[in-house]
Amino acid sequence: MVGYKHYVPVLRWKRAEWTALGDLRPAEKARITPLVEITPRSIEPRKKQPTLAAMLAKNAADMQKHWGSRPLFVDLWLLDADLRLAGGAHPLTFLAQEARRLGVALIPITGLRRDREYQDAVGGIVARDNRGLGLRLFRDDFPSGAPQVEIQRLIAKLGTVPRETDLLLDFQITDQQCTSSFRLCSGLPSLRDWRTLTVLSGAFPRDLSKLKVGQHFLPRSDWRGWRSQLDANPSFHRIPAYGDYAIQHPIYSEPPERANFSASIRYTLEKDWLVMRGEGVFTDGSPGFPQWPANAQLLCDRIEFCGRNFSAGDAYIQERSENPNRTGSAETWLRAGLNHHMTLVARGVASLGEP
Image 1: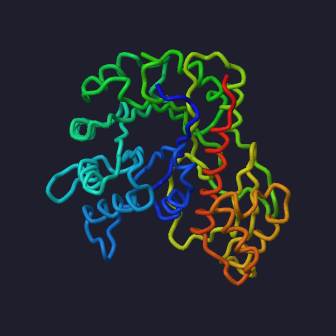
Image 2: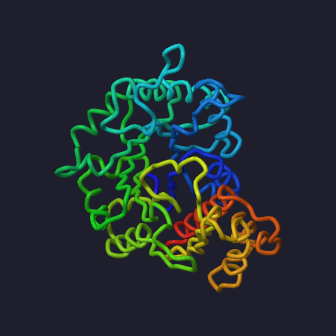
């Protein structure tokens, strides 16, 4: 039974995310198992990768380059269920094949509502890799308590047992129901036997459009809720690990092409997010991209800034504050914020006292 001092960030597999993950230091990587969601945008054909197979192979290569042979969860639930390769193979089967070839320790994620072909793909991967699986349960799977019979039936069908299965309870949006997640865990079958047990939710807003230009503190309700339950249940018989959606909204959506994004910085603190809100970079009369280094200067002058040595993300923020001609982009600032967030959370979880 793996303990709760471990962190599971949910990451959509795009360049900002995989670079932020790869830039983590070894100590933080050892405390993290990322849950990678493959998105429709991440498998869109490109000039150098004109087919679905080529794009899936690229995704596997990026996993190997930026995460190596460490275990990571992979979920294809955001893709069209009818999507298949030219020869009829399931995308998950092909992705796992490429990961296997490259030495990536892919752990497939499934759920109670996946179709038969998806479950067959997961079962085949489990049998081939002998690495178990991750079972991701959403709040819709708990209409009247924990679905014990369904859970036991599914993992048996997929050829595994609780001690070879990572159980993830994903509430997605943090709300009042999340404050009872520990109690919900107590109704799960074989609670002590699961390889890992994790509670996931996210509290970052969908976008920053409701914030005025300036500096704002937003409560990290996801982290606060998990900590309050930990403090209130010190003798709970299986404390779940913590997982979140980092500095992104839990419900997936792609920004439109050529979006007028704001030049903002998302910076994670112990109990809050500090948002340095800028104007839209393409708004008429806006200072544009130079707002990023200007906001970085303001952030680096604050007592909350952790300093360039804290993480690769912090080093990027400090460097841009000192070189205002190098403005960066929406992607690089998201990367910096994600890297800082994952570093801070991984260290925070590891430093918790024993209950």
